[in-house]
Image (cartoon, rainbow, N blue to C red; front, side):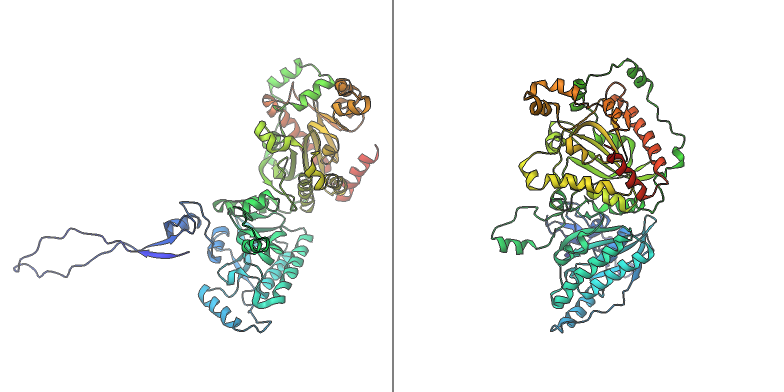
Length: 580
């Protein structure tokens, strides 16, 4: 930031001159307006009112550029007033390599910034939720990770583990501290090991990636969070842009390595605007309060009724059962209610989380955390799209390997925090494309089946449309599987079945009958446990009634699992599929 001072001269009307007979003329007093400090935006180059920028959370009110934030200001913006308590601030920076003039540089930086090192760690509350909070400050040698930075972070992780507290760490760094050489490099392993111990204790860690987060910090604690947040436009990467351009000999595209790039490529859960950050962090902390069992419902909802509306009861009375082929057609309709429709109706405060942490965020899979009448749950759904443009973006609900990997990442996260898992399945099958094969489609599906079989929290799976082959099964290894009355679930499409067995795809209608793909058929085969009523069709009019049925029965399902151990839940799931 470049701060300037602007002085504004104010003109006043002078009184008429006095005669000598009058009182002597007093010396004229010149007045100036109050000092207005300004800051120049790095992007739009406009001169801004500093106080207005501060009020706007250090965001340019002209172009939206995010200024870097000093430690004390960051703490003030996210911690509840007066609650921050600094930890280990007395650690002194040494010179492990006896690097020339290093002590002088550190001392000069300390004098200039008022900080004694590049990271400040401590405890506080955020919207009443107690947490450990850390802030790396770019003003201190570009936030580089020297041995004191690594030590403070490691000690804070250890103390948080001992006190069973979550950790939030604002990352902002140019990477390793060159003057400390190999000792700086060792901090990557040390901090990562401390994060692992904190995680193994079942505790929450949230890195918030700010501009810039690069080098050894990115390649260690910054990318190891349970939930990774980023500020808009933040530079996030291992090698810096200049290093990459020099290495490959070409110019990088606009937006490369920015937060939006990382979200698209699966490495960030969410990008959060600065004015929403405190509330978002408070919400995540609240969702991760330790709980016992799986039915911690708000007593205010004990008397809630989950009956269909009078109109839906009437419509259900006059609706006729569909033939198998008619159900295939009904399940494929674009206007059919989607997973996101049920999520929005059933759950509260849904927060979508993105990415597989390997390659990409697959929009065919929507997943995140929410409340079911006060009980935290992880919710995952296949989403085909609501219109043609949306369908194309979501690949018509055909997940790629990264979609399945995102889903299992969220499921393992749910297991860590003792959250039940609820999935909504509606897919014609896994995407059969060249890129999917190159990225390991078969392995991704197999890994989901493998991991879901042993997850030690309840899993409930709802087949809400098409259930196509292994692509559907990869999200349907549940303690119970429910199916909507006009949904389908099959080894492959009727067209494919007819083509393979009868060498005639035109016999698809006949195949639909012999394949036993309807909810009623599959309940008889014990493949599904409950049939969900559609009240004449899963359309917008029926949403409230269908969702009410789902919600009431979900709560009953979780009450039934409430006293079961994780091993028992995994064993029951194993036994359920072992019988086939």
